[in-house]
Length: 253
Image (cartoon, rainbow, N blue to C red; front, side, top):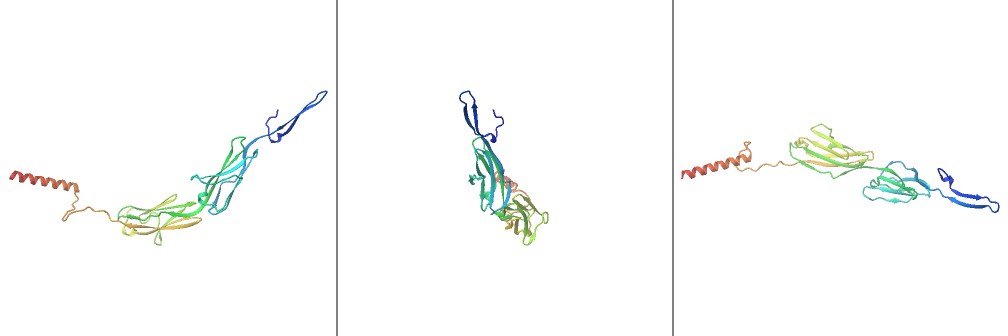
């Protein structure tokens, strides 16, 4: 009986029976199986886009486990490597995310570990849109930029950098989005604005125009008087007057 078997117990064993006439022996070979275990794996890393990356996953077990790498991409894509080493040449932002290493030898459940790879890249502004607002109304310019690390934003009008809270504007940055809000648009607010997105790898900018649109006006006939009454009230008054005149002439004749 062997308690707490380990790999050093593996090997041939001989049982010998001594008798007066002929000694008898029997041999048996003990094979020790060891569940897969990952003993060394690359730590989470951050690299710049275009760099070359090597991920390492060393595993032990008896029999020797098979090691595979898998990219856990949200798009369901990615590549698989049947090796302890996973080499990525010219890594792109789409190849960021978690990579899963699995060690398998069918003795027990696979040993699975994950490595997070962060790919840094410069800002890129998407879909800047011009905005039309009437005088006296609220206007908002939006600027969205993808970047790792997350971009910082600056707003300019012509060559002047805008500051939050000055000249009746508010700048608000949340994640990938920056907004420039005008609470009471005046003539001087119209024009070309520049959104600049910056991180440690670079910067980019986009031009966004705030332009004037006319307020819709009610149609009125010649000689109409705008005395503050609603159109519905005026219409009811006209109907009442017409009915009264019609009844007057009907009774008279």
